[in-house]
Image (cartoon, rainbow, N blue to C red):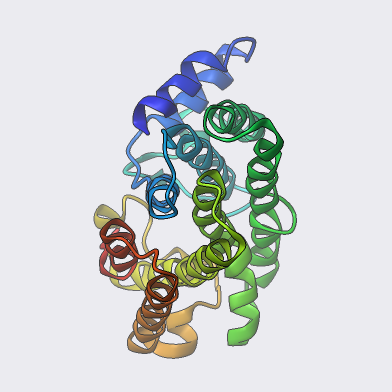
Amino acid sequence: MEAAIAACCAEDLDGVAPRVAAAIRYSLLGQGKRFRGLLVMASFRAAGGAGDAAGLAAAVEVVHAYSLIHDDLPSMDNDDLRRGRPTVHRAFDVATATAAGVAMVPLAAMCAHRAASRIVPNAEVGAILEELMRAAGAGGMIGGQLLDLRAEGRALSLAELERVHRAKTGQLIMASARIGALAARADDLRLAAFTRFGDALGLAYQISDDVLDVTGTSDQLGKTAGKDAASSKSTYPSILGVDGARNRAQSLVEEACRVLTVAGCLTPDLDRLARHVVERRS
């Protein structure tokens, strides 16, 4: 996957303004957990895929990295630290960071198209691209970012909070599981299982993020701790308490694993990724 990400940077940035290209490389080639990309590859293998899904994993990571650049902008979370380094707009400037994020959407599409064309028939490449762009778009991640901004300073109900986070964080994680299954040409029943797995895991991931924002330090997280409280955001710990939020995340992980177990698709890799969601410290 790291090689595929590097290849995207090497092959697909021709014609991009040098400073913008440098900002994209800065965002993509730095440290990252690569959780979503790993989920693509593990789901691909678990669904019976043959071939190399690393390029699809790279495409998902490009979309994720773009979302982090824009999340950190002064007009959004106004953050200075990401993955243990200055955020892109601090390392470069706001205009460059904004342009880099926008440019990464077609970059992800190019990476995904090239990778999908190598492992599925041309008629099915479009379904994978559609899945990635849907998750990244107004009905998914971008829409969730807007809901998150509008929620600042408001006391949300648990249902309202879950709506925000199923879009902002959950959609791309669910899409990662689905893209792996689609690339493996899973049948409808198995695809539905991976969809439910990814949906539960995506919400659990955001709950864990909320808990870590309260309990972790900036050094541990590689980003500024305590930002949610500083922005007067409703969070799972603020509604359920820290222990209640942890229990909710754990129950979602158990549900996710149970769904794939019933479908006969839970592999050790997917089980480890699911458990990591609630065990991680950053």
